[in-house]
Image 1: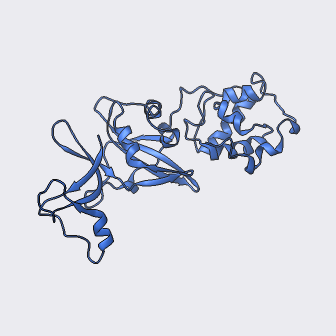
Image 2: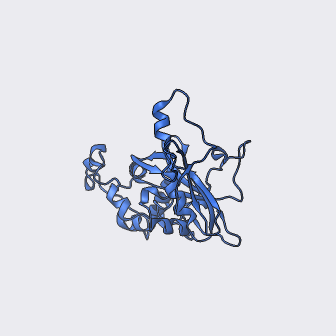
Image 3: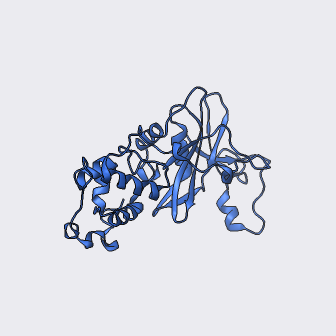
Length: 272
């Protein structure tokens, strides 16, 4: 199990210079010492004992980020990701490769002869974590980039590419409606291609991007509401919901979907 590392003994400092509040917060009485003046230093690092007696460093416990209103501890996700079959080491970052679109990205070093797919990693994490804590992409690396003093250089980790998302086996969209939906998703998610069975949310989509998708679909003459995207999250199922996917000829009258359903102040009940 992962826990916070505390350091004791003669080697630790007496406290922070001219910072009594911080000293009291980080230098705590040592419950394992008979000396009442002995202290343990609260490092803020996370680690765990391995079966062989080694102490493994996991990460910092202050790597907390905010994603779409949710406060998330990256170390918690890293610990779950590292527990996936075939994963030896894991790091999770909150990246903002597109302005205003912050996403979680998982980085893994796999065991020899093991190559878990992004879909497999995502499915495993969904068993233990809320969906907003599951990374939108998973990048396999062979070694960690390090700073000059030997620490992990998080800024040097690569941006995810198309292979990092949980895409299904590619099958080309069928009909004009599916093609239009796939094109919108490619643009919104920054992907080179989207298959007819690819799931919008598995590809890195989220509730706030649904609004953008709906607006772009409207420009193409396709009228969907927020609930439709959530209940039909693939181009094939959404096209089937919107109209006849066999010929792709589909036009919905403006009055079929009331404008109020797309107004910002009515989105809250659909967002997750």
